[in-house]
Amino acid sequence: MHGLLVDDDETYTRVLRTSLARHGMEIEIAYDAATALELAERAAFDFALVDLKLGEHSGLDLIAPLRARRASMQIVLVTGYATFATAVEAIKRGADNYLAKPVTVAALLRVLAGEHAETEAPRE
Image (spheres, rainbow, N blue to C red):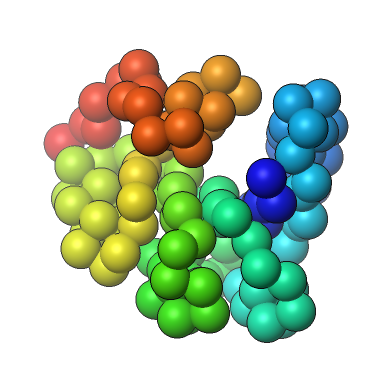
């Protein structure tokens, strides 16, 4: 699988990329929305893991443009600020799933395989 990690936390993305590579995945990283869209123009990603907070921007705003570039791409929004309202908004905007940070590799692999990830429910 070929994936795109979009998160402004450089350490988190490097560690996650290394862990996913051990499972045979090819991963590219974008630390901001503009870079994510540029990479999505050049490569056909199977999935994108998008952080809700990207500096001054919202990962919610990336869902539609990423979906427009590749309709079959699985889009998973992740956040350390999980709320029910944000989860609903992410799904309404076209995300395939919503996970609370920290996201484990096992949980992400289950989600990408179409299984339910056992994560904590968003807080109200």
